[in-house]
Length: 99
Image 1 (cartoon, rainbow, N blue to C red):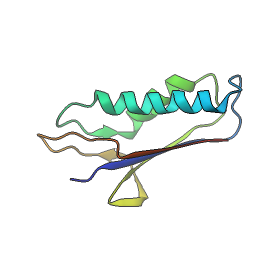
Image 2: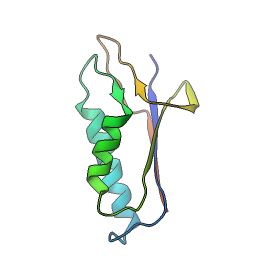
Image 3: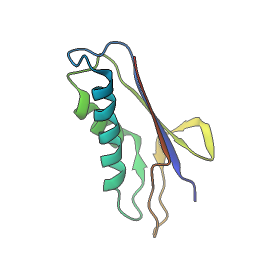
Image 4: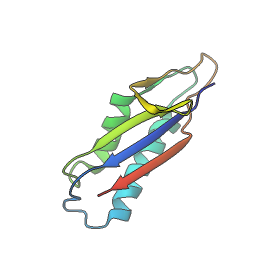
């Protein structure tokens, strides 16, 4: 099994939310909620992850970049991580950068 690695980077200004730690917490929570919602046999999809994170910080960022990586290929972004029929996609690690 390959476990995905997520890197979520918020780029440029923070906007109305002046506390970068709070913004990072919102992003982390949204990513964790997305992965916790995936059932057995359901793939992780970058567009759905991006939507969940965007909804959490929509009024507080001027730009947002989200990438998913497999732990087996940490330098190659992927748009989906397939789950085996009897397995789940789990979050292996998360890196949030707020600029």
